[in-house]
Length: 202
Length: 46
Image (cartoon, rainbow over all chains, first blue to last red; front, side, top):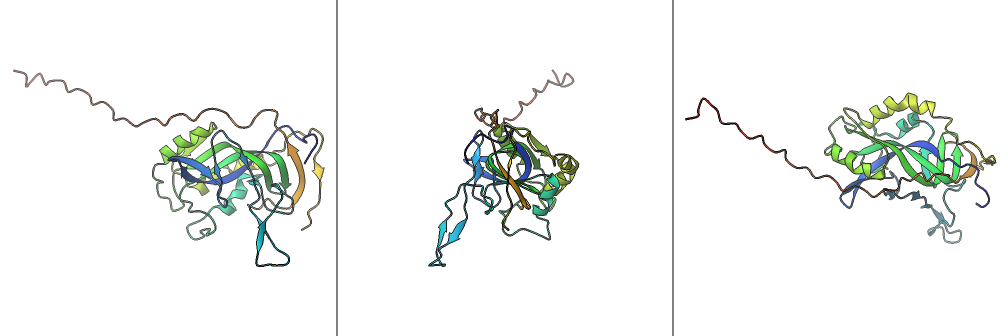
């Protein structure tokens, strides 16, 4: 995309991270992609989807487009309200097999900028950085997460507020934050020149 | 995550950098607290 930007402030949405170890320190990681969010560095999205070869459909090729693209699902995802995250939280009787082991996960607000696709429930963007992080002290079964204080200490490297939620599971944290998240729903930046409208083909 | 029905696409160029630039601080080491020195019991003093 070229020309003057449409907005000059990032949008701020809600998302979940898994917490992994990188060089011995706890780091935020995406649930479904191998991306690790590095402190002090924006995360730049890339499309990991593959398209089928028309002549040889058993073969696939990487897509050539920059993320995000309207017809794809690529980009850094964030939701417009924290309550929407509840769908993506595993419950003891409803684990998500497609997610990484979620013993350790974090809930947070994330700043999004660059190219942004806005949906009815959230955004997909080309660039992102955490804005605020909540770390539950309990796993989905209500058991203490080992070393959670050390995890929170490591996450302070991001230079954004990190909150350790005593006696809370991820589901509790989402529930506690929900009124605030609802209030954030119309969190759109002030338009500079107006966004470009477009219609979905799906 | 399902962001719902796509509504529009736009570009954002923040005036202020959303990334706080600072070096990660070295992780503080856990050190055992110094034990308080025991005062000699005056009743047992010779």
